[in-house]
Image (cartoon, rainbow, N blue to C red; front, side, top):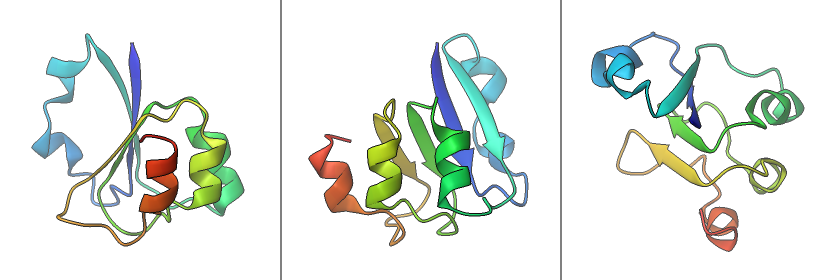
Length: 95
């Protein structure tokens, strides 16, 4: 089962846009509504996830974060672009 983290859903609206129950046979979702204290906490909390669904530009997806998330394969954002994602670092890891 693929593990997916939904980040920065501080309004708790992700379930309104995605039918998480319908997808629960293939994917395990965890919603993070609160901001991480720092990057170390983000690395610790996100270490097991293969995909990050980012709803806002609140959590910086830095080179250090990307390099420390060994299972990470996908980064998805809800907008047209997200300036908080280090795209060069993601590209280098084929994410």
